[in-house]
Image: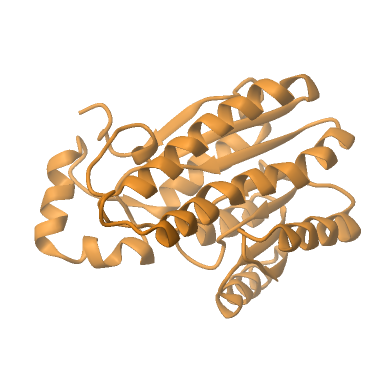
Length: 250
């Protein structure tokens, strides 16, 4: 029996990386997956892979920073399935630039995609979770949301804000049996991190920061997200779960 049997799950940024692994794993565990991404071809390919493996999924072209597009995704999900049990706010971007080198336009773009999208997803999904007497929301932050870091002020600010927005929502909606948790990946091999992981000097720096002697896999993050999304984590809300190979411990 799958951990998400009869659940309906929205996963943003599902076209590649961690979002792709989350969508595939959720479908394998019995969820009906609404996979969204700004890259329409990529997310359609994920849906085809899910269907080829016997799962059920639909895709949406989705700019997560746009309110109207969230309304479209959530209303479409409700029309098709009648409920939303799980929301994974996974979509995001990186921005490796110091505070003084970051323009206002860059700052706003990072905050809109990494933070405002999380607000919008919860704003439009939570009323339906209330109607359904519960649900689980997993917001993907970063170890940058736990530690200061260097040279990525906008990114760090956005991910720290996701962490605290998660806690605020957990407190506000616990009475509705809606659980809200954040996941904080460390150095994970994804298309977004490829230029760093494939650079030997940068890779060695990554490894010097971890307790485990390797970078992480997107599938390992997906397993943690699955746990928080499932009823196995029924008494967990407001937590921050690092998936970081021991970076924050070190």
